[in-house]
Image (cartoon, rainbow, N blue to C red; front, side, top):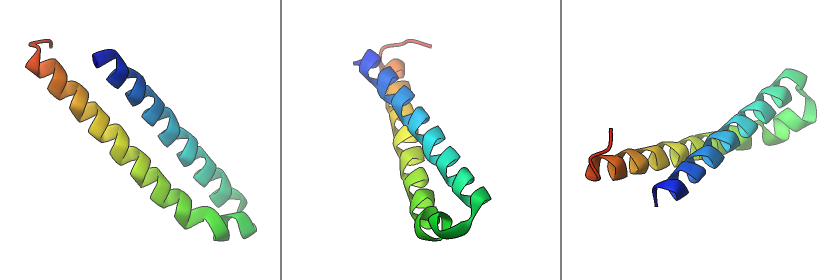
Length: 69
């Protein structure tokens, strides 16, 4: 179970980075893309960060129940 949570945490962190990079690039270029997707990308980044945080908390909880540091 811990291995699965480690993989999910990695995927969540990479997805946060990808959405953040896309949003920053769109903001820097401006134009139609930023007007159309800027707010949606911000919301998606917040959702991805929430998933990453919940996965991290689950991993820490699992480790604390098994007595691992």
